[in-house]
Length: 178
Picture 1 (cartoon, rainbow, N blue to C red):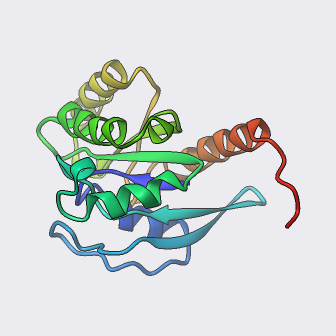
Picture 2: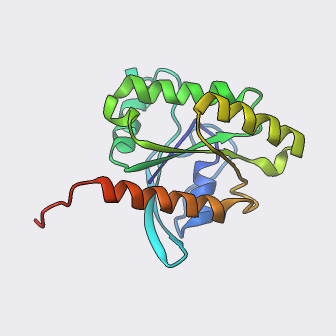
């Protein structure tokens, strides 16, 4: 699975909270410059989670290190799209990343995506409800309200991720042993 989102969406915090990975975490954009991997354990199962550096508008055209980052995302079977709940316009953040993914490749656009509103520990219940509703409408998908830093909703999200990962694996043709 790969973590997708804008800079400072909480991807590294999520990776650190759910695995033994030790990514650099700081409160400024582009803290992560290279993908980080961690093994996530949930209910006796495990999967690899890739923390991909943040994407920005124009990434599909090479803005920043966008092409390099999108190539890493393309290798992932399932995408977890984290949106920073403290942003004023969470739908804009969601749509910016979806546009970059769509413009980069059809293969990437068709990957299974799980959507999560992160940093909910910094929001009021009313703000969470409003932002989750807006993201559901924009994405057409269920939206998980979480806080990677506080652990809120993380286990439920990991279970949802595992469910989608097993479904995607079952759909893939069996690879021949090399």
